[in-house]
Length: 112
Length: 113
Image 1 (cartoon, rainbow over the protein chains, first blue to last red):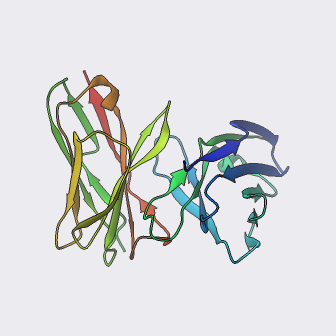
Image 2 (image 1 turned 90 degrees about the horizontal axis):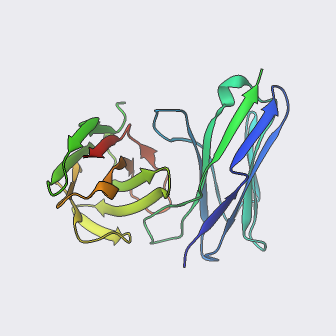
């Protein structure tokens, strides 16, 4: 069945360091991969997304890479700041499924 | 532009009761999706609506149902509530659904006593 695995479940980094979160998907037809950030008690916020026709996408300190052959994609956050502390979710979907399959989430803690 | 609005924000019910949750999408968005978020199961897809039609449904029992109105607003209903239904119910909207960016509301926190 459709499944998205996400690692690690928790990640603690020093302010200014980089953080990497990895996801693996099972459905080879998946072609859209968004990332969401959810702060405590708040809504998930879309922070970046990538489609399968692109290998990498950047937005300031955030980047996402996609390896279709290996069926995995990663979120990279550089120069981390305390306000980056949150739970991050990856997700995957394919055409005409009209649903997102989410990973289990990564709790990122950025230590000042 | 106003975001996705969900009402109510908090709800307390007892087992056996039923509940209706409401979602107003971002203006112009015609696709509305519902997700259940729990600490144990994470974010799970419930269903998606577009132009008043359900296009997909997740693996939830028939007690969970939904609908969409002509103005794209959506409601979901849970009947015969069980303790395990306690969760944060999130609504997300997008322009046309499919592989379009989805934007979430703040959710409805449902607690079953």
